[in-house]
Length: 333
Ligand code: IYR
Image 1 (cartoon, rainbow, N blue to C red):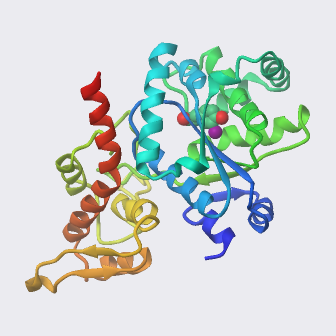
Image 2: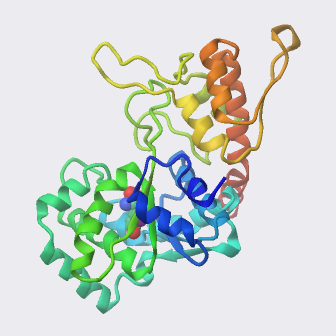
């Protein structure tokens, strides 16, 4: 796989492709980052961008994980002290998940976001940005129904982080897209550069395949789940025998979340996937890539129940190291 393919596999988009190709042509020492509002427990959304960070590390990038404590505070996620405690636990889980400790720098937002220079630059961005634009950027990130002033400041700080962390590539889920577009438009007014951005897909709701899976609503998978929890959730998941399910009668788009998790979480981390099947049903199936598994599900060779059984087992493998860290931290406290 060439560097550009490695960097962009399973990504929804790179803004722009040309800039992405220029980074891929000379990746050594280039810097990429993702920021996360600390919540204490890694869930499947965090895991998706973390997998992309591993691709970038393999390609030679230096990776920064921003533990965005001030952002979480501005987005009404609790007291500042409480957020700081959850951030430390999150860092351990990222490492347990597989980020390379020697190649990953963890930075707290509060370590630089209160500096006088940062705050002055923030005010400069405030002067350049309409409330309506800031509000639009937050549509898929804000908690609560209305946008508070703190949440309008939030995307401008996220934009500024790109300058202060000196990164070449900003990575995030598609819900971060509008913040990144705001950054691309606004940062050149205070700095000469605009960041290249890479966005990962959103996984559909596990039970219905409609909309996106969210840690705050519906069923999500996290490092708090036991093997039995994962099995139960995956068994109840929506998995028609196609990667392209029909829309609902109301015209709502549907995805196959079981296949999405195989594609975005399992295949990037395991070279082969084995689906255990009793001999009377044809014996084990072995897949070297996502495409052949999806094709077998579509043709009927692979039954959804067998696919789900395998998915639960591989997800458990991915989650187990972080789960142990979390449990160890709980017994200590
Ligand atoms: N908006 C992110 C958190 C975040 C991301 C980056 I990249 C930042 O520079 C700051 C905050 C979220 O929704 O979790």
